[in-house]
Image (tube, rainbow, N blue to C red; front, side, top):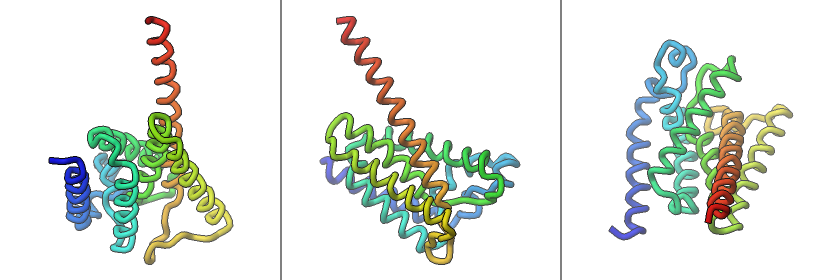
Length: 195
């Protein structure tokens, strides 16, 4: 199968699977009480379900745009691995640092993490223009933080967006990218010295 068809197939399977599991929100969303009582799968699955059709449509559209903009340059197994790691980090942070947060769901926090991480990663390896992805994510997060601090809520349908998940995602994506960059730089310097 050629590369373009494969990418479209991956996107179609993702959209279908995401659409199917929306009917199981109550079983899959981040629910503090349920997570603390042992339903730890919710730490990861919360990022795949949404509150309503507006929330789902907005996150799905963002995911597809981001995927075809630059995630197609990433191997699927690597994208899945970082998705697993970042969704876990975001949920555990919400669990530990936001004790008044009873529930959470949605893909947007994870998308912020992935865009931040892969913007740095791809800009380092390929195209310096991709640094713009990191700048855009952080500008968006800072604008949301300023608006939230001044009392404005961001709404999707009738739901208030938990913009802290966007900030947490952007933070973990950025920090992980720079840690990886430092590691790659040290490794390549060691290899160069041993030649």
